[in-house]
Image (cartoon, rainbow, N blue to C red; front, side):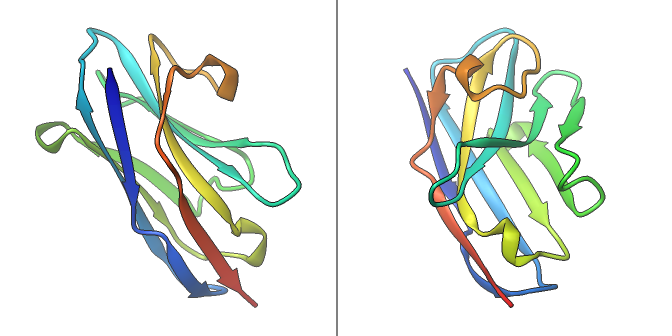
Length: 123
């Protein structure tokens, strides 16, 4: 099994910044990707960003490109999401997820999920 634990969410004013963390533990895979997704009330879960653990290739949704940065620390088995220039529409529960194999922007392709962390951006 894989355990994913998110942290770093909170309340921030529009234009502010937050950094989310996702610590992974448990079973390992030779090839996998980690992704960030978010879900606002009444909306479907949507892709935010992803990173291939080996190689570090990164992928972003258009809505966050240029504002968010995904990264990882191999030694700590931790993924990060630095969020700058936050907007009220970024308000959501943010989830990290792990997928065996390459990148995907579909939540249906991810095998393991964290419990989520709330991000609220006030106007």
